[in-house]
Length: 87
Image 1: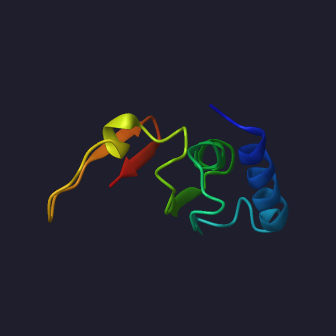
Image 2 (image 1 turned 180 degrees about the vertical axis):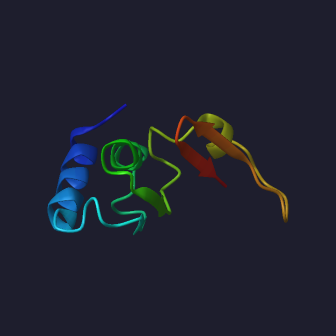
Image 3 (image 1 turned 120 degrees about the vertical axis):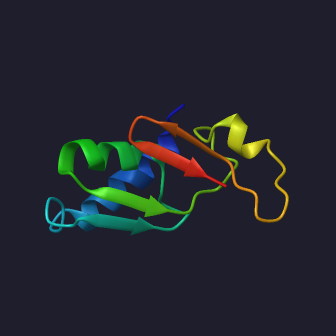
């Protein structure tokens, strides 16, 4: 579910990056501005890959990732099209 806060954050990121879009190959983001919606949009519209950390309490993070308690050296991942979430 896309929230108004997510849209505002993505809009702010895009305003800052406007001069670089289309020329940047990989966009690195921290958990304050990264979202699966922004990553998907940049990959499709600008051929720009996105990598970043994300807060696990975001509504767009798959339950298979957030609800899994991991042991040492264990990972879990889920993908949807071009977006991959790993824990």
